[in-house]
Image (cartoon, rainbow, N blue to C red; front, side, top):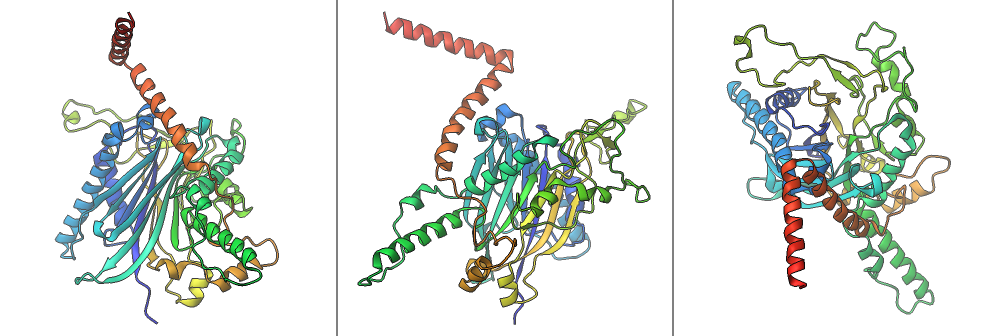
Amino acid sequence: MNETPTLDVFILTFNAAKHRINIPVFARHLYNAFGQNASRLPELLVISLQEMAPMAQAFIGSYVLGPYFQRYESAVNLAAAKFVAEEERQHRPKDRPYTLVTTRNVGMTGIMLFAREPTAVRNLQAAEVGFGAGDMANKGAVGLRTLYEKQDDDGHILASTELTFVSAHLDAMEWNMDRRNKNWESIVSGLLFEDPKKFAERPSLQPTLEGSENSEEERSLLRHNSTEKGLHDISIYKPGAHLFVAGDLNYRLSKTAPAPGSAFPETDPESPNYFPNFLSRDQLATEKGAGRTLHGLSEAAIQFPPTYKLVASPKSKPQTELGRIGDEEDDVDEVKWSWARHRWPGWCDRILFLDIPWWVREGVSEASNMKITTYDALPAVRSSDHRAVFLRLEVPMLDPDSLAPTQVACEREQSAVGSEPVDPRIKLPFSVDFRSWEHRAMVKKWESTIGWSMLISQSKQGIMVFVTVLLVGLGAWWYRSR
């Protein structure tokens, strides 16, 4: 049996704390991450961002978010160029540079998709959902879905696979664990790649058995099955697609803030408080195991310390004027840090994926497994109290029909006895929200208004412009009404 082709995917998640990144520093960290357990650039690169910009700019949207996205694009280009130059020096085959295929955001949460072969990215779709205050997108999730095709030199398709990427930012604070679980429910029910109302109104596309005495009952059943399948296909759990969820999921080590003198995780392997000893208290693992969040998703082994909440040590000042030459602000690679004492450290920044299902592994080959290359965190940077986390893995290029469950798999999963959950590719853990698109469109109008109001109020010049426009408008109204 032929081995299934794979796609080299690199996913990074970062809470930017509403600050712009230092491009050279971030690029150097990316360059080192690209070379970790690998000698080639990944084929597909996804960056998940949270708090990527201040709320005002984020609510206004792409009009003012461009400069924030551009800094990450520049960092990726710098890191890739350095990697390619190193390949040339070592006489290895050169990798093609990256093309930014698309960017999307929902409020302060963004996602970027890069590809070395942009023509391989087909049928791109996007989705978004907000679940912050008033369902606005100060917290929310944004998703991308694409069909990736590998072709030979003659343009013949060698393999194709569908991928869904979700960038999410769930509710903060130790005591909000139940709200984080509710946020996940909102993602499952509301992060939809097409308007669900279309499927509620769509007649069944499947033929009915004319002349059968049970034809009306059968038509009703077929309509139901067709609608259910359509809704499942527009959800994040589309049966024929791979799923990756990355973001600041905000799960902590406790439901309460730390008491004075609490023992915090340490990086010393000899310490009784060595950080792996705290993994048993991780809320995400506990809640996922209980079937209350991140249903069906897997995660590579965590071998890095908690990524939040960091306090960077003050930057050392150069002793002489000569020492300041070329020293750009925050342009350092090694940032010394400690834990903030008023928050429990936590593995807030995570990347999970839907592993290859058993019905595929049984029917294809042992090669059809997700192969983890690296799961690690970038070094700390001064602009954020989070460390970025990245996952690199080899994804089997299984076409949608091969990945989707068979009828036998559906029957076996649904007839399982006991508390074993049904695979979410077969049964969604939450019902689809038919009003999700309509509701999001309504809330988005308020976000834009609030964003512009906040931006104008933040500067004297903006206030003066606003007052001038208001006075001119009132004057014009008065003149016309005379």
